[in-house]
Image 1 (cartoon, rainbow, N blue to C red):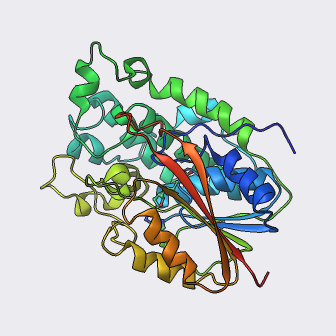
Image 2 (image 1 turned 180 degrees about the horizontal axis):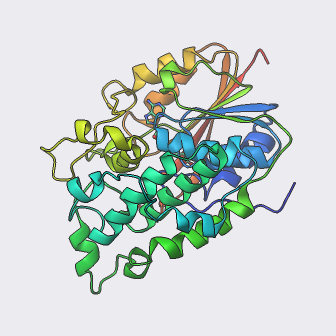
Length: 353
Ligand SMILES: C[S@@+](CC[C@H](N)C(=O)[O-])C[C@H]1O[C@@H](n2cnc3c(N)ncnc32)[C@H](O)[C@@H]1O
């Protein structure tokens, strides 16, 4: 196995910092035997990528197309064919092409500066016109990561360009990072792609289903769903709608919610697993779809429904021996309020395997 280099990520709920602990529990403490994994709520692909590094066959899945592209880049594709020079040239207007300016027009003063909006408009249209899928995924990957780095909280749930521009001092914030140019950030992410794109000798694939419509299966199914705290939580869609919009650039104008200050783009919004009152039902249905696999669930001590409720649901399935592990205190990179989260892992060991 090559030295472990995990892609950097600024993704809400990413397991990057604890994936080694999770892996240790699965393979040593719970002693699960598996050759393939399905990462149903793949997100930044940290679990999928770790599994790829460990030579498993990996099926990555996420409801959002922008995440699916991240999954394609890191899990399905084994190389990066985009050079830095090539990436930068995608900011140039091609003679004879008529460019639309949806970001400049509809997102003025919301997330990025005028100059950056103009760069995004040209770049995304050039990238969507590429026919080399490897280059296209790389070009989208470095754009998504750079957009996230330039945003306060690394999210798109608020119209808060002001916060970035007027930031002077204080405990939170990374003005220097926000003000880095796309060109500078692209250099960093191209270098990273060159390091992390690897071939593990298996056929690994990325998919774009909602969890309950995902027809795939594997020896081990990893479930890391959105989770809710007592305070209302912003949905994943609302946090990342802008990136989903970029992938669907030509459909943006027809899908903007002008009633919201952040001009949320409604494409691919779903209530599945995003409604705390229906969460247990969704989870029950999902588990029923994977009764021949080992199932592993990441959860937190302060979530709704409670750990106890999840445990009881899992225990109601006869095919599993249910083990619960506490991974200890863990503050997410994007959690600024210092509330203590304890990360919990449920391992449902399939007794028929
Ligand atoms: C807690 S995050 C997963 C984080 C991931 N394990 C990582 O390390 O980055 C939950 C993910 O579920 C995705 N998601 C939300 N609702 C979904 C659904 N109904 N089906 C599939 N994916 C969904 C979100 O896009 C988000 O990426």
